[in-house]
Length: 346
Image 1 (cartoon, one colour):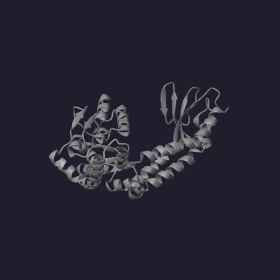
Image 2: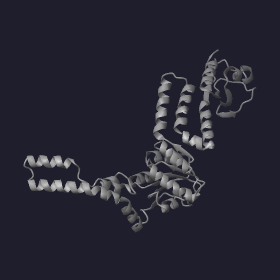
Image 3: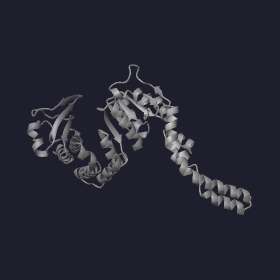
Image 4: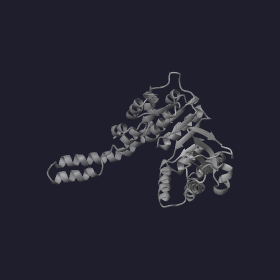
């Protein structure tokens, strides 16, 4: 079982704990042995041996499981460092970069986005297959156990700008964050949480922001469903905000800045920038912004105009709309709907 656990990418104490915890022969062996005896496949002596062995392993397994921690600590003393390998690290070293802890589905996606944006980053991963996949995509990777100080030192956590913790194990994340705080107390950390208890633990460690992937995915599905049911976007937004506020309440209550940031994000989601085209038969054609009374009629603000590939930002009231122009309008979904109707009417 320890080997199978290791093949699935688990490291640290997990393979040892699984191997010792599942070392007993299960109760199902009694049934199999009985069937074998009744069918004549085995003799009574072998049947007695199977029963004795199964009972002995059941008695010994709890004792062996208690040895997990001492054996793991002994392993660490005899082998203080896990295998460490660096791939595609910049020649001038790491500085002002993002450290991504975990190269799974979440971590690899974040790495792809940062790479497209030409942001400096490094991924720490201990699964060889994931490391090879990231290496094939040209990602900067450190192959090793992030709970080991030498691995974090190689990632230059002391000069990093941000740490993203994407591994699902809360205990592993908390142990690593505690060590990071000793090395770089001012580092901003965004961590993945599995439940409310994790929120409180991360809060004590001074984590900058916590994300619950299942919650966010569920809210997005709800948002899409409610949109198809013709629920007003503002109502959907109020509902999702209420759910987020309830779930992330421990962070809101502990950090005023976090609450303010959440409020700003909420406000920004209520405003949308929409690009609309002025047609020949539009009511706005050859009218100025002032003459059209757009702000007083619809509530939207004209923040940009695109004409023949040239972008004009914050156009004045004397700007005259021409056919083919694209108008950048800022407002709530309701205001934009009114403006779009106004634009198309004659």
